[in-house]
Length: 204
Image (cartoon, rainbow, N blue to C red):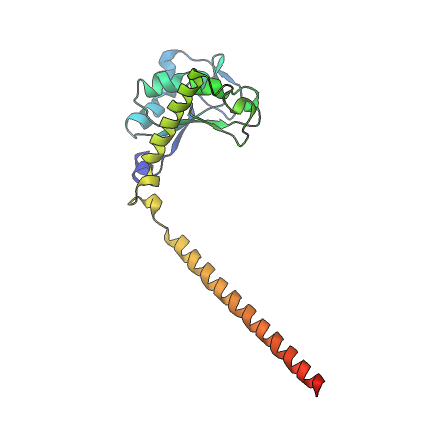
């Protein structure tokens, strides 16, 4: 985490929390000691020692609640470990995949829904609600904090520098474009010349 952060990258630590397999709606049961000593410890180290600024919550259930609405992002990551960054859901799907909900996620400390669909459970139901506005403002703050503290706003960061391979590709593209245009000009000029010569021959 520290290495990525030093290069201006905010890497997502995932999947929070107790997520052992790539499966949806699997309920994970654990006592607090096992959770803290085994499953949560790597996240704690990433936040406290690596200064992680981003996390992704899992598809799993912790007990009877989806991990995104469990509230651990707030109560454990933010309040206990000092996490200040943003939390993102895993792939959300068109309908929250049937168990994820934006309202519950925001209330539970999650700031963004990883979805390309802007309706249904992917969005806040009542944006005029004072409570919803509070959640959305908190989420915006966390997202902006993460972005501003990355290389995106640091002119000296490696994230802002153009890699050598990209510079080379740009040069190749420019040269190819020039050659293509030059070739096209030559073809057109030859065509016009032949056309003119044909017209002159016919006139004679």
